[in-house]
Length: 391
Image (tube, rainbow, N blue to C red; front, side, top):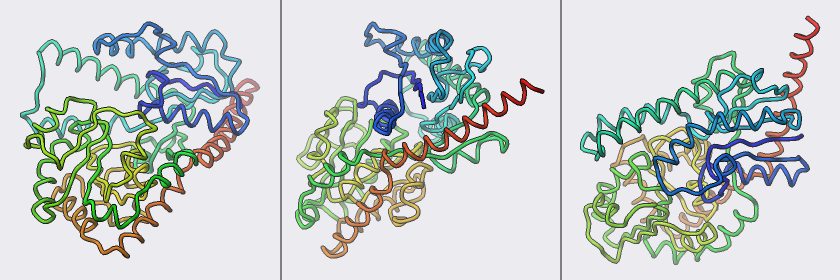
């Protein structure tokens, strides 16, 4: 198949959402498909560090993407685009193939989380009035674009079963998870320190941007509860993408030797950064899938998560004891403590179960299954077009 990927972000695997597109594209190419992409950098080649300019570019991106498609629509059998990046009817694109809207996390779920967060944590910094107005307009337009894209596409590709419940029953949809390359999975596994070393470290690791959605408001209580029972517990925060002072302020602690913060790191550094972790933590309130969770499992790290849709699809069948109710800090802390205090035999079995779960989510398998489903839906779309033409 000839596949065009469209994403309103830079084509950079260091960015979580873009990484999904980059790695799946490579897996499709390895399987013999012809894959092209059109991204934010193609639409706006000049670099910018301004958040306002970046937001404006994302709002302008759909028009640029539509123009790109119209110029040579017959080159492609499938257009697979991030939800909201191409909110245009197919007839206006002159495209007769399969138009797929790919969710990287339900825009409705994130919207609902934002509403809940404003009520639950009303003391959050809100910035200047002008910024709040701009952000509100920006988010509303992204939401409108996402709703249009879901309505106009031929097929919706979702990362978890829960998002399927939000769709109209008549809307064609598939559920395909995200994954890891086999080489990356092996590297994460091979860098593990011995189980006895990791268990003795009493180290808890978190991967992710420091944000309320990812649990930033809960960590202060988590740390207090864990260290009350396990005083030797250490914490490692990876990829926070913010100043260390902000993280420490939210944690309500000063600089100390039992908290390590790594604001940014190169992806290739992750296996070493995780190598001595005892247990992982992923207190996310809203998530499409959870690659950070999957990477910790691949590194043999039992990782406790809130029972949000994405993590649920990874853990529910085989590691349900690692899921706790969303926002329940007490149970989350208890699950971390239970792993920190496990005996060596039990811990080793836990490691094996985590590694086995990670083996189920490989891009090579996901690429093959997704391509097969796309071929079937492409045939459906073409058959419908021929029927309409003759009708």
